[in-house]
Length: 186
Image (tube, rainbow, N blue to C red; front, side, top):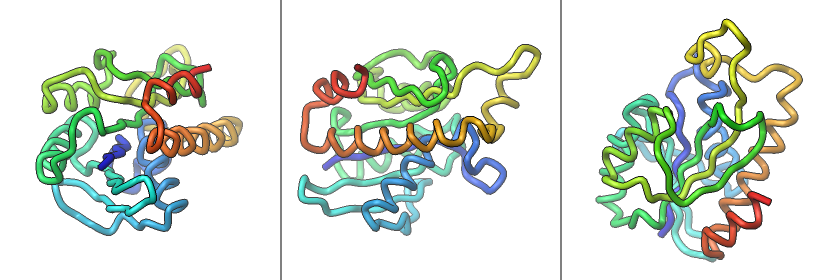
C-alpha cells in the first residue's frame, strides 16, 4: 500500500495558493483516477484507490500546514503504512517556479509542514516531491508570498508541474523511488 500526501491548508482562502500546491496535486490525481476525496478521518480528507499496482491512499491533511504530522501519523498507524511507502508533495521556495525535485530524505529546510512530519514520523527519511514556487520579491514577507495565488504568467508553468508530478507519482507505484528520482530530476 502506498500513501500519497499533499501538504496545504484547508479552506477557501488557501485554495490554489503557492503553499497549497501539494493539495492541487492530490486533486489532480483524484480527478485522473476518478477517486473523490470523500473520506474524513484522521484530521484529513482522503480517498482509497484500488489500482492495478495495489492499494493507494491519497491524503490532504486538514490540520493546517504546521500540524500535518498530526494527520499523517495516525492514518499510517491505522492502515499499517511503512515510512518507505509514503510520498509527500509540497512547495519549495528554493526552487524556481514549476521545477520538481525528488528526494528520499532531508531536513525540513524551514518548511513547517515537513518539520511536523519529521517530528511525528521520527525520521527525515521519507520520499518527497518538492515543487518550486520561487522566492518572494524583495520587500514581501514569505508568509504573504506563499499564501498568495500564482500570477497569470505562472499558471501554465504550474499546471505543467502538477501534470509532471502526477506522472512521477504514477511512476513511483511501479518503480523504486530512486529510479523515479533519476528520471524526473534529470
